[in-house]
Amino acid sequence: MSTITTPETPGAAPLSTENPAATHTDQANQATAMHALEARYGASWHAPLPAWNATLDSLLAHRSVRNYTNQPLPAGTLETLIAAAQSASTSSNLQTWSVIAIEDPERKARLSKLAADQSQIREAPLFLVWLADLNRLEAAAQRTGASAEGLHYLETLFVGVIDAALAAQNAVVALESLGMSSVYIGAIRNQPEQVAAELGLPPRVLPVFGLCVGYADESRPAQVKPRLPQPVVLHREQYDAPSQQDGIAQYDDVMGAFQNAQGLSAAGWTSRSLARWRSRESLHGRDRLRDALQALGFELR
Ligand SMILES: Cc1cc2nc3c(=O)[nH]c(=O)nc-3n(C[C@H](O)[C@H](O)[C@H](O)COP(=O)(O)O)c2cc1C
Image (cartoon, rainbow, N blue to C red; front, side):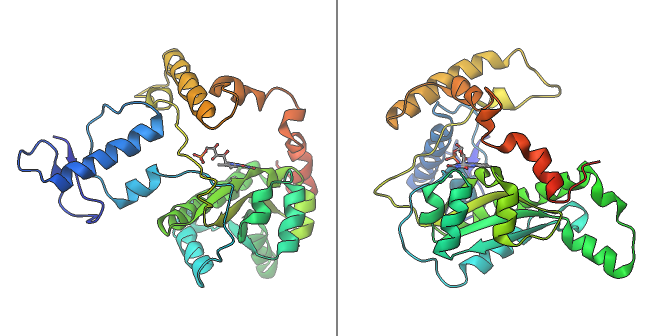
């Protein structure tokens, strides 16, 4: 039986969508949920609806925002976001990540230059740079005379990058729940050594991505961007490559229409995505990430 809870009462007993006594409010909430799911896929939703709540509303409404007002963030926002970030799971509780909060307009401008001159870095009141941080535990090893040979393996860098990503995404969920918006900045890896110098990073600390945080300028609105149909990404029991073709073709149409509505050329998803991998140059400097990592002290054994 499909059920739904009201966004106003998360955790309340699920409401039956098949219950003849369902109220107008239940129906309105179901309509809200359906609308959110259909916006997320740019297609109609056919699976039964489970219980629904404000968390799902907020997750489904995510959109990256690249235009911000100059409204400052309320006092304590940064600390609240970091508490949410630190609440994410972390491999073996190693907590191999750090974050640098940048509000100084001049530093944001310099970082923007290093990250493909993206104006949103200058515009957002807060720019967070999330770091895979192997230095903290290395310093602890040095203090205590312990061996830290494991530090030098690719696996350990993976741990730091994964930890940083999970923490950052918790912050994104938190800030969106507070009515703020953000956009990740992978271009912070275009010139990692220069970013490391700007931020005074010690060895074995990698800038993984940036995150612009602020209030969306709704005079220049961003829309929810549809995602691949679920059968393309959701495999049951074993990976199923052949059956993905139909879903991808369908998504190319959905994204073509979305891009059209945005005033962009309706290239579709496949060709736009493949353009990112067309050549070494299309990696915008990140083709030399291995060299940059070695310069930052990662041996990558
Ligand atoms: C790790 C990561 C790096 C990204 N880097 C950039 C970036 O440098 N500039 C940018 O404008 N958007 C960047 N994005 C945002 C993506 O383009 C965006 O999430 C994607 O197009 C989906 O759109 P949505 O977030 O609005 O749903 C990045 C996203 C992620 C997860």
